[in-house]
Image 1 (cartoon, helix red, strand yellow):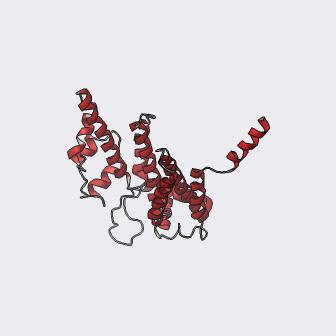
Image 2: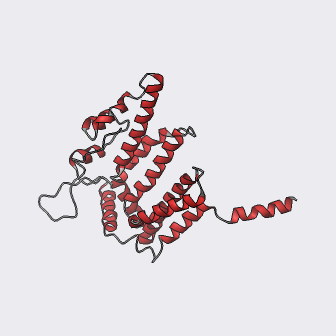
Length: 261
């Protein structure tokens, strides 16, 4: 009996699960055409070169080093950390290393996403349909660029919030250091700030209605502060050494943020 039972367990260790299959399919798909489509955007080389300049000078550039204009144009390198990572990988492994890095990030993102979708207990066909729609709609963004870091961080953020909402684990303490990294990896970090703040605000309001007291008075101000300076200084529990400058006087200045309901 024991030998028969062991024989039945062998395929479970050999055959990958559905989530592992998702990882393998996306990872292999990223190498289609030797990974040429991942390198199909000219900004990849620009980010690599910017990272090399940062490593050489050991400082984040304040002016555009790629424009032959006098005086030099001011430049906020808000993706400097991802550019440093790209430069290190490129210097060590070349362009194949770049393809491997971003293929790994993308496949890990969809692997985590599918595991999260399956945790809801829905029909497997519905979950697969959702994943296929996500893959098809996001396929255009499979490029070796810093925004890929935002994709995986968004999935991680939602998993942390859902686990907390369902009382399956409190990992909210991971969010501040994660956001601190996100600020320097890609300009998509406001997405995480607003959704994280919205979630905590909602939870605080529910607690106020139930208990009659406020536990997050600072965060509750996010209902009306939008993207004003008071929001960044009064509502956020994390420092934003580069992010504040980006949103106050950089390319994101003037963006109107929907109010939380």
